[in-house]
Image (cartoon, rainbow, N blue to C red; front, side, top):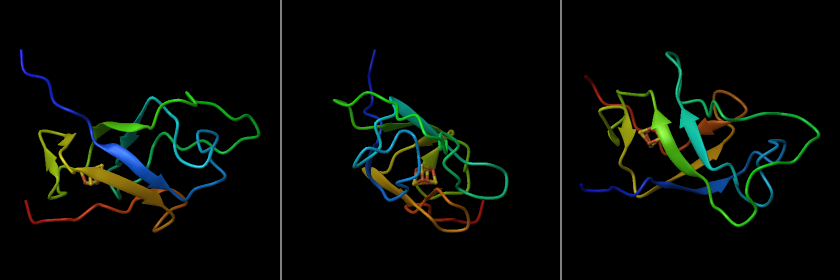
Length: 98
Ligand code: SF4
């Protein structure tokens, strides 16, 4: 069975997120809502978490209109996350007409 590599979260500028310790250390993130390419794994709180030795990957993305999205899977080589329309959005998002 073929395997694919999930794209890494190369950089995340959202320092307030519990998973951000000079980069995102969630095991995987989920991106998307019906309105925008929001990082749905973002959590604002005093507790820091994640796996310090791992760089997060994009586990799922709901933005079917993004040019990097195929069958709700992200195929970008990597993504960056930061403030845009919301506090934590996928900055690699590139909408295309469906
Ligand atoms: S680049 Fe596009 S497909 Fe990949 S996580 Fe961002 S919005 Fe989703």
